[in-house]
Image (cartoon, rainbow, N blue to C red; front, top):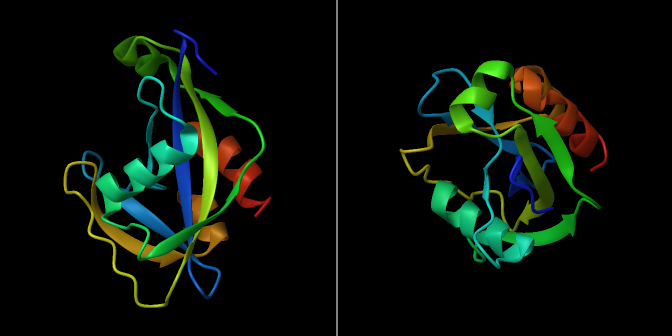
Amino acid sequence: MVSPHFRAGVVIVVRGLDDRILAFERNDIAGQWQLPQGGLESGEEPVNAAWRELHEETGLGRDDVMAMAEYPGWVVYEYPPALKNAKGRLGQAHRWFLFDALRADIVPTPDGSEFVAWQWVTKEWMLEHAVEFRKPGYELVLNAI
């Protein structure tokens, strides 16, 4: 999904052995939690972007998690009006990936620039705490996995 109006990217769900998922607190907005995500680089395949973003933002890699599934299709959301102006585009379009932890003791190391904290949460908790304009996409995908 290449468009000047929507930034193409990926979102990564890391599922633990107990079915909880990893949530990360944003550095720029205290108390705002989300899943790892990021933009596609020119010519980059979405699954490769998912591995890259996961490692950049959380320090996790192939020794910690295994790619399990990709949500079929793009999940699109629009920014609220103030963000549309600030970002110069209407929103984002993401491919979503599910990664399973290989063991119970994985420990992410948030990058400090995007994320500052992490915790294992239920899908329900993540849906309750997701940013409003992202909630429809989170609900769609989290309810499907």
